[in-house]
Length: 327
Image (cartoon, rainbow, N blue to C red; front, top):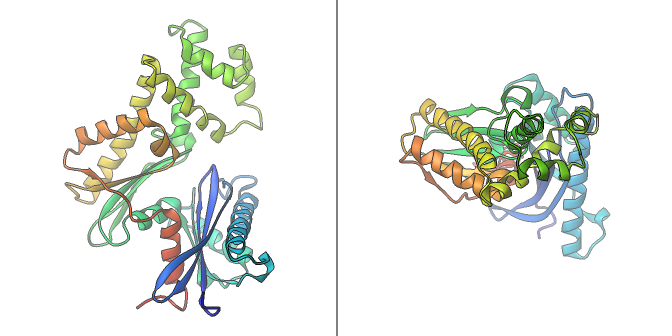
């Protein structure tokens, strides 16, 4: 590698984890040199939001640097400085004060001028990575959910993803939360009892609805903890549990409706679609139901293998903010 070639950092910061990819701009292209991951972020206005944001950046960057130096057989102290960086983070809305705060935090953590940094929503970096130039819609379902699309003229539209208190339908949290709601109904006779309740309560070490109530209001129990229950629901549905399948179907319908609204807002009759996030990538029953709902609502849509991920999208934004960006 040319020792003078600029190093760029791209971050994909979700609620569960933050990933960092280091790349070098060399010979007119970006070449990855190191990847690392760290803890996730929360909304910047949360009590520990800014600190979690900084820790996510620092931890994932340190591990990406370690990955790079291990490949080179060098000490981590010998790595070159970062020239420009961008982060796509959960909860950051474009063109809001939060975006400016996120950029300032990123710049401070990396000791860079703010002009060489960008902070935006993780949905924007996912869109940029999946569809660098062309029109398309990205459906993101991880701990949270959001849908974002772009038309051929570069006009963008986002739908959903307004936080679990307002709009979590279509996410892993939504699946886990619905399952817990059903479990207490099962426990007190409002719904037929079943194996799903038993599996959930066993996973949470709860023996009664009172135990569950105490658990979910404890300071140590958060959105991500309920999202972690989604694989249990998906497994139960795969084994023929009708209640679990109904939960997945409601969540899949919500995600497909958000994608359909995005397509209509952008006048995309046959949009290319890209799936992102742990729920869509790892929950097979849920993915199949989303696929079915999408083709019912948008029969001319098509799933496309994305050219890059959210870290690639963040790196593209970082390159634009560097003095080495292509013209």
